View 1 (cartoon, rainbow, N blue to C red):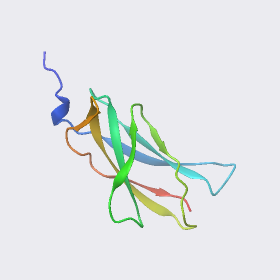
View 2 (cartoon, helix red, strand yellow):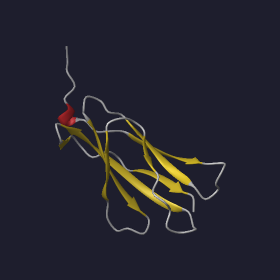
View 3 (cartoon, helix red, strand yellow):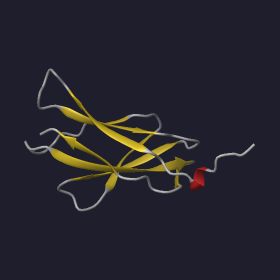
View 4 (spheres, rainbow, N blue to C red):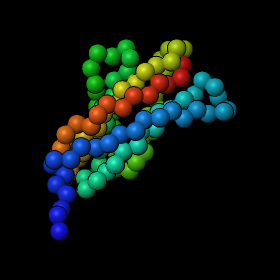
Amino acid sequence: MLRKNPHTRTPSLRAGNEFFADDSHRAQVTIGFNKSVSDGVNLYSKRASEAAFTFLARDTESPYVDNRANPTAAPETRDYYGLYVLHDSEIGDQSDTAQAVCKG
């Protein structure tokens, strides 16, 4: 039987928007991911106004909900990528970048 080697695997991210009918100014981004054989995923994010990705969160169950407020009234593009975590260490390859637009 072949065993999956988490050190050579790459997470797959899916980012989408969720809007709330009760408040047209509230929006959040849900980031789904496959956990594979890892303990979880470290998520990194970059907002349209930022030059570099920064650590957002470590999550052990999909989906992660990014409910940070949009600082402007205009729609904001957010990019995300993830890395598997096993025993508190990042392993494998960085995921492709997932993108979502957060309502202003």
